[in-house]
Every structure is written in C-alpha cells, then in structure tokens.
Length: 188
Image 1 (cartoon, rainbow, N blue to C red):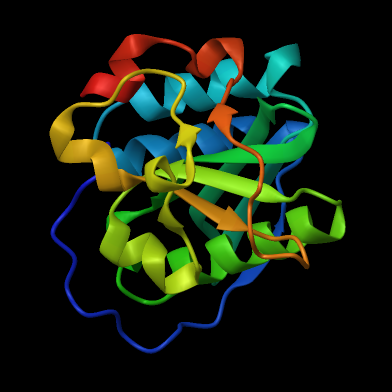
Image 2 (image 1 turned 30 degrees about the horizontal axis):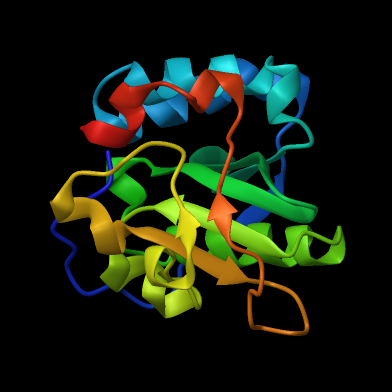
C-alpha cells in the first residue's frame, strides 16, 4: 500500500481535478480498484467516505479525456488542538500513471486543505515521492503514527506543514478516523 518502484515521471499531462460528488462513488471505487489491482483500497475509501469520524474529508477526482483517471482522499485526523488530515489513498489508474496526475492531485488537495485552515497533513508513503511535496519524516518531530510502525516504515510516516509557521511545535500521537484505525493498514 505504501511503497512502489517509481520510474521517472513524464511531463504533466493535462487533466481536470474536481471534488468527487456522492454520485461519483462508483467511479471513485473503480479508479481505486484499477489503480491497486484489488479492492482493499476501494473498500477503505468507501468506509472512510461514510465514516463520521473521517469528516471533514476532501475527495478529489482527476479526469482526462472524459475518463476518471485518478483519485485522492484526505480525512480528518486529530492531534491536540491542531487541524490535521491524513492522505490515504492516492490512486491513479495504470494507463495514466507517470504522467504527473498524482502530483496534481496531491498539490490540489494540499492547496484545498490549506485554504480550509488545515495545518498538518500526514501520509504513510514513499519518502522519495512525498518528499517532493514538502513532506518530511514525522517521528523525529515527535509526531507519532496511530499505530507502531515496522522499522522499515519509520521514515514513511510523514508530515507536511501547511501553516504559515512551517514548524510544528505540537507533538504527540495522531488519531485517525475509525475506519482507518486498524493495525493492518499500518503494519502491511
């Protein structure tokens, strides 16, 4: 779910990104299933979208040539009195990968969250990929994942500070939505 061999991305491919609507649920789930080749992530997205503890959430769809080619979901997270979110998952269908669509989704989502007053965004993902967007390892900053992580994932628990301050002074354990609060999602 978090690591993959990544080839060099191609120049950004033009796409349109818009909020996913309730009527887009089947399309969102299809993108997730195609992107990951299984239904685990699609089921997680379905659960998160209906989970009140995941709200507010930001769900964005990327469209190219009238086809949904990517999806990203950010759900509410809690850390003291700080507005935070967790990015999970990011999906781009295989035929549209390495065209910059994932980059556009991450950037659009982080921009939306910053405008909404969210200070911190967390992700459990590839440090090389997410580091390009300003994500840095969270554990050295005292920002613990919802579950203890395997040693191989220590640098994969990352945070991106969207606030003007750019220096998280809050520390502690991040609490995620109930649907994401299962050890299997954190232990892989």
